[in-house]
Image 1 (cartoon, one colour):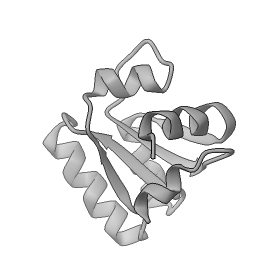
Image 2 (cartoon, rainbow, N blue to C red):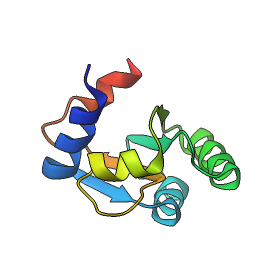
Image 3 (cartoon, rainbow, N blue to C red):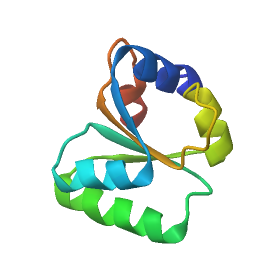
Image 4 (cartoon, rainbow, N blue to C red):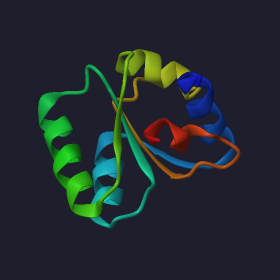
Length: 98
């Protein structure tokens, strides 16, 4: 499966929230189907994401690229350390979790 394409299609056709604060907020509310974190995401944010994703039973996928790579995959001119997919739209990204 092409992860980059899956993320891009979800950003374009679904409901995706970008950013650590908003992702953590969504996790606390149990809203979302999948969290994606860049492999260079800061440790404190990573720990928060892992903690709240366990509580809300939302899977976490570690993206193999950096936050710069993740930002460009999302079509954004800024870095994206984390994003949460609330609705994948036409994307098959949720299949990455099997």
